[in-house]
Image (cartoon, rainbow, N blue to C red):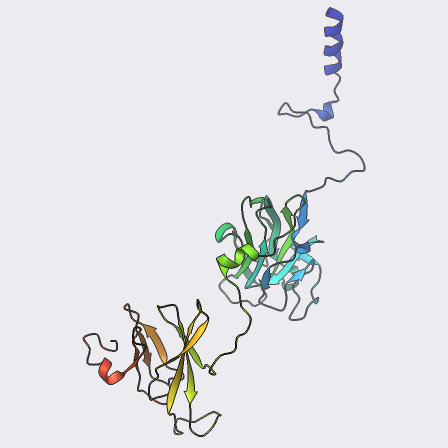
Length: 316
């Protein structure tokens, strides 16, 4: 038994000094010929749900050069180049459906070296409407900033946002360098579950009139205006006949249209406001100063002369 103890003690004392650590743990080092693998995907390889950009399209694995697609160069921040990432320009928003399968996001952020020390932006990461990371104000003179691991557990919709720094968007060419999503075996969602949360554009619909102005009523209906002129279509000067404004009420729940009462003047360009009771006030218009308000219950227009006699001027 004594000999076995001595043998084990001797083995423990011959561990090479290079493998020791000051914390009491042993660092076995990287195996020769093997590169550490990150579980996940570069963000530039993911298909976004949608994207908007301040100058041309968002670029994958390249900087944002100009208005044309593919006109950027290598992503470079403070002399450091990045083989993967996203190039964009303020104001930029890129949306992804993570399907609650991602763990974290990391990236180096900063302004591309192509603009020198110019430009000023703020990088932000949003998850389901909550701000998860902000870089603070960065200029072209700043070195790349690492976001760290931004936690995304349970997040459905990811937004990568670049805001203008407050001095306009000139030279705001922003880079998400080496942007990486930690998510093993990840496949992005198609946005189906997000549509009821954030909404989406529907196909173009036929409309019963050619609207020139619209207002959302407190009933949820959409009121649209259209001119009604006697001498055919075209642009009229204020001296030409402006007979009335046609109105249409659209119910988005039922998907139906109904005719709305309209005043005797054209309301093109009129200022619109709603009272706390829900009445819609229209002030002015292309044909001149006459105006009135729309009663939300009867959907009838009340002339301004009648409005002015009420205790609260301008409303019914």
